[in-house]
Length: 273
Length: 288
Image (cartoon, rainbow over all chains, first blue to last red):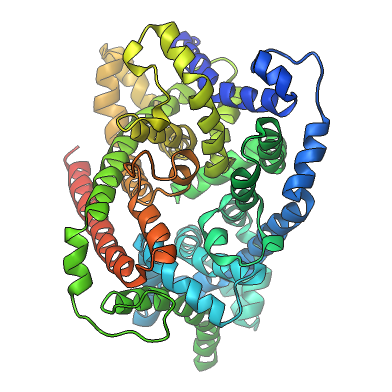
């Protein structure tokens, strides 16, 4: 019967741990809304005067809206193409797993997860520059292609758990493989599509190293990369720097606030597969 | 059926070619350049055999980077797994405010490592000394980021803060596969919590432990963003990670070929470690 009682020890443990998680966020917000005199007086106290113009000034210095558009474009296009392409690649592999070529492909994609990025890093810059892909669109292509490793693993795992009857019925009805995939299989993939979408979004939005080495023009930089450039130029203006960090994190935080249940269960689903 | 075969091939061929072009080709180019003396810019280069590889083992920067990267990755992997397993156990028990805590503890996963590291950079410079003096730990009353002995631990701290969330979800997924009945039976037997954990919970989530250990170590061996944002490799180069060194000296230090050789060795090391880890942990899983 002890099973039904609240576990106060665990609750207390999590409550104390929350301080570690909340303190840096609280500090970030406080630094973002103060002017330098207020920061000098106290970092953590509520300000006497809220300096909301920090956000406007920081946005101007970083070029926030331009960077936001770049990051949003990269993330949205990457996610859409990833879901609509990686899924049928995995489908073909799963359907033909008894054939050497397809089984080999599966291991080819999945084992690439163990290739550390630094071995690719130096040559890929030369390669993409040759193809004039050292821009936003080149970056999107790389994300969609590199995502295959992990996504094939997720999709094949999920496809194996689906019943076979539906698609066989569709094929008997004379539907082509493409039709069967889009009309019967793809809708069934909705839960794992959500998982792939979440993981890809977090990756593409926050990734720093690939934009750092790939993007040649300042106007094409992403939000994380812009923080790095901003830091080296205006690192001394603490309040603007933190206003800028907060704005860079805000879109994801807002999405997370409203969709956290869905996001957590999506990632959990990926873990079980 | 022949038509079917062609359709399936049409589904995978473009993706395979693109993957080969943008993933496998650069890896092969990297291996090729590691046998040359190319600096990354000159139009010509010569094949110099294994010279770069010989020099990699003699280069103090490289050896230091390996030392830092390994001690960082091992400690971070251990801490991340202890913390995320503890948090997952707590979140999986009967607690108050469950959905609030779940939401909060998973939040770091969606934040950029680079920005988190910038935030902690300020924290270490402005709060660390006060906290240590409050706790009365005089030895630690310096900004760890500027301290040769403390810098790597500060990087561990920030990395754990940002990374434990993802592993927590993996463990939580594992814990949710265990049925309540097992616990009820052990409660009747009078087993205490500690024994219950080691004899029931842990063996059942062993596969999740394996995957978490392998993924964590592999990920942390590639540490980059947080090094750049916290210490930029300093003080005195003691926190240069392997990835950081390859980036810095490969692109701007005219060591393109030399760092390619470094990357090839690094690749072999990562594959070997992941493989050994998998074999060892899977064997243990069987014995549990």
